[in-house]
Amino acid sequence: MLTFPEHSNARVASVARRTCLIRLHSGEVVEAVLRGKLFEDGDGVAVGDFVFASEDSGNWTVEELLPRANAYLRKGLRKEKQIMFANADRVIIVASLAQPKTKIAAIDRFLVAALFGDVPPVLVLTKTDLESHEDHLREIKELYSAFNFPVFAVSNLTGSGLDDVKQLVAHGVTAIIGNSGVGKSSLTNALIPGIELKVREVSTWSGKGTHTTTAALLVPFGENAALIDTPGMKSFVPFGLTRSNLISLFPDVEKLAGSCRFRNCRHLAEPDCAVLEALDDGELPESRFKSYHRLLSEIEEDY
Image (cartoon, rainbow, N blue to C red; front, side, top):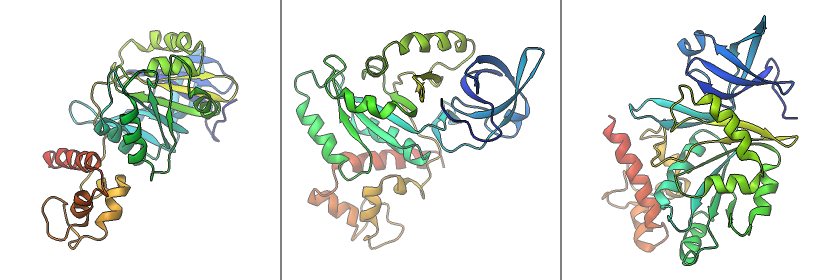
């Protein structure tokens, strides 16, 4: 059974406006009302949160939100903070090698959100059964070879490469995220047979009032594991990025920037810029350089 921290007797499985589904320590799932103070004092509650809930005549109320170990954040349409999920042991970023081919920039955005929120990332590349994927697979593996996170290449159709990912998700809480059309649902069903029905049960309840592009669902499976399912998204913008912290979320760029002539170098056209020199020499891939500057330009538009 998944463990609960001290003082918590429930975990949030789904949120819909001022109510949520919580999974009690006993495994029972009940509907609960959220205390107004949870919204007044902070960001409300998110899927994966540990909470303390009280019961009165069969009616449950979430009284307290426990501190989060981590959180995965995105920026909403009004540039507001949206907590997609919290307290995950890992997040699987799903990208497809073909039909459609996921752009490096999209992977980088999901990766930046994971690093910013202290959620350990895992990259799973799907559709290895399709032709003409080898070059993209090689490019991605080379790009992230220096990063300390697992990269898997799988086929949801043939089952190739899935065994290692199955072992990874067999323990703890795994969130799955990715753009629409990358095979996220197929991957989920291949990893956890029958999970689709469990997700549908929670989704049917949470459909009353949730924002469909951010609604996540926590669904336990097996004895010691749970899945946080998120909807496929057409676009994703990480929340919380600033001019000062962005470079720390691009460790390959940050390492090079330490050798720049100017401490406030923006790596655009400054003299003796180590980042630009590495770009010219092929040491820094152009796709990573572009990802960094796209996010930097979006940050500066907010100022």
